[in-house]
Image 1 (tube, rainbow, N blue to C red):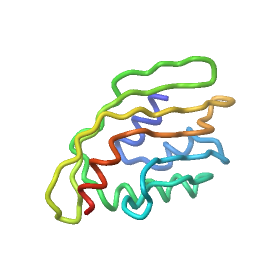
Image 2: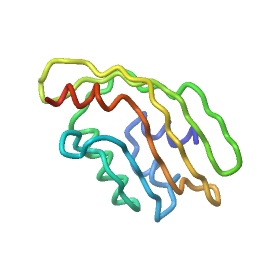
Image 3: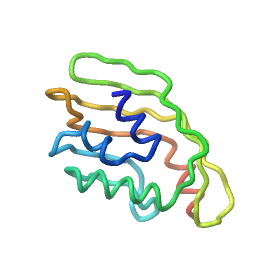
Image 4: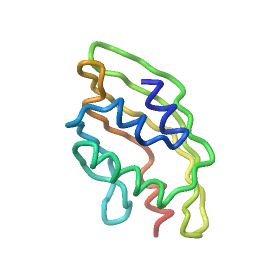
Length: 125
């Protein structure tokens, strides 16, 4: 799990995808009419689509996975993000988050995130 976060932190998409099952389900909550990267995606192409939407729109100032909790095939990660929109709109997103992972055969099979969607939607409006 930590290797996936390390890969994300250094922008190494290939290394991140290597931690994911080929048929991973990737879920980001929020209103897709407002937040470009949200929705349910599948497979490595879906993960790349999510990462592209995120990277196109946000400049991260902090991305901190702070606590990892594992139980069976589930891993919960609690963390914090601080980011600004690249569009030049004013405002700062500062949000704690929770990521839920399901792991099968040593690979990430499902990802779902929970964060302050109201705060990010406010930045986009």
